[in-house]
Length: 164
Image 1: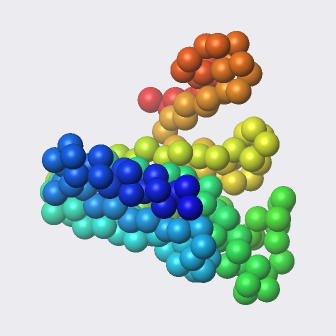
Image 2: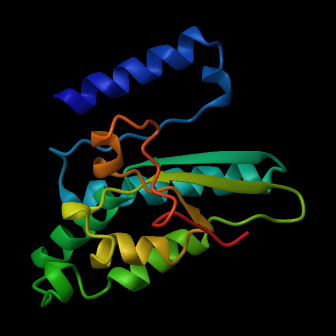
């Protein structure tokens, strides 16, 4: 599908840029079982931790962290757990916390993460993005309303945040 094509295009761009030997890519297809998709972010993060522990500085991209939440929701439903707010898994905060808190630096290496966060119905209070945002040092919120005015990048400075 579309995501497979995008993944292939990205791989070839990395290859053409001669950076493929410095990049590790982990893909999770939407047609895979939810347990597999849930492990994609964790697998990528484990790889990043290994590089960090080797003394490297790692830039860890996640596109899209919402897919991690959705996979967790599906796994939770398969396990027969009662959903919590807006149908998400009751373990959303714990699972997101475990993932996000592993993105950290040591004395010899670092992991810096850039994550795309889908916001359902543009509702920043939705439990999935709200839980994710609680772990991020900064957020850049793109606004459809600002984009409709022809302003690009359509950054909403009032909804965007920074702790630093």
